[in-house]
Length: 298
Length: 298
Image (cartoon, rainbow over all chains, first blue to last red):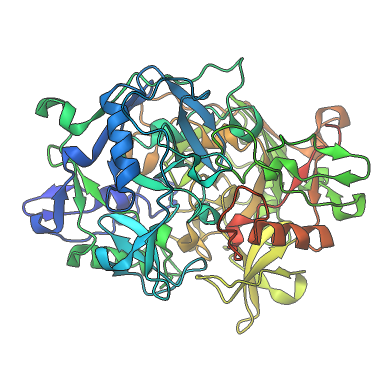
């Protein structure tokens, strides 16, 4: 029963932030699951792929996924640059489902962003690296990780797509498949709603500050929308990493999902070696291997 | 695009509370998934199986599972009757994992409750009804529903056990497998941590008021424990249904998981017929079919 140690030790990084997920101890005392890595196993979360959103509870950091939804990511960048989201609000928090933000009425002018985009539901497999999971999936022929994101693939169709794990960010839309434009986004805050896969355009993942989206009061209206008598959490501002002076960014690093360290991390999540487990498992699903990230500044 | 209708219509119940889970609409407008049922498809949540817990945000209603953990459920009933939990607090909220409550130091006297119990990890299959899911599972040979709870089974060992879906309640323990006694409980508030299956004693499910547990501020300590400078949400009191006058209970009904209506509900979750879906699925996992409940009083 040794308490966890600090997350950095010379050139070896101890994945303690995620190790914290393992135990349901009566008291701290679960042995940490440690995966060694070196600096080459990590990549900087480049400022051009990073979105910062200031909410009442704190700052949310989102990694964008231009590889999977280039047109939508570019549209979101344009909206952010033109301050579309500043002063808007979180409009919906549905328990065990999604938190959604943006313009509830679609009335704010779009500026030079596009109001019409085709949905980007999947991509050709050929373009993308892939670290497979060995245990299969209920919803797709293959699952694994690509460029830091959980993905599914179908070798028969030659297509790959992002999956709805906790913390994944998608483009809200109306009934019309092409009605999503990036002006309203949602994040998964409950058990993975995998039935949404291939139904919406996914654009990224929350890397830091997820609690500022998941612990918000639930909306009491239909589908978890906030009602008129509930105060909506305001979005102070949203900025691209490239818009911020270096001192205001958090230079996060994300574990490379094509690294040996990440394959070891998958194995550590599949079979639990901590003393606490009496049934160590031996299988893992795609939404149970969160991609590690770290803040080298501490 | 018709907005949802009210949840009761003569003898036919429209499962609208759960239908609300389906869409990620820009605006309300998703066609509700409707499953017809009649009164025989529902059972009263008997007061002897019901736990009420008053938190700052509101009241939580938990259905106990004596079929799966008779000794622990009986111990929890004793603790509740002797007011063990009154004035204690939520002590841990770890994002995408669990909310945990009880005595952080294990110092409160147990009264006539037992301090030592053997873990109740699984049960003989023979005792329990079972409505199977057809699409398989990554973690167990068979999954389905029994007496209102998500369960897994292994025909080879002849054992069945409750699974860690969102809202399921378990007994926290230390490294020692027999160290859980019911004085600290946890509830799943994120993606299902199925690796905990068969590692802890599960005792029930939150049927109402889940948002009062899932939207709490996250603990900033290790494993999501609240630190000294965070105020812990206090448990005003916990009562068994049988301890409350009828007027103070909520006479909830839970859909019988061995009913035709529930099998239809599974199918409705497997293949989405709502206009919103362009990829209607055709498969479903055990944690994606929440068991419907209703309040006949409205």
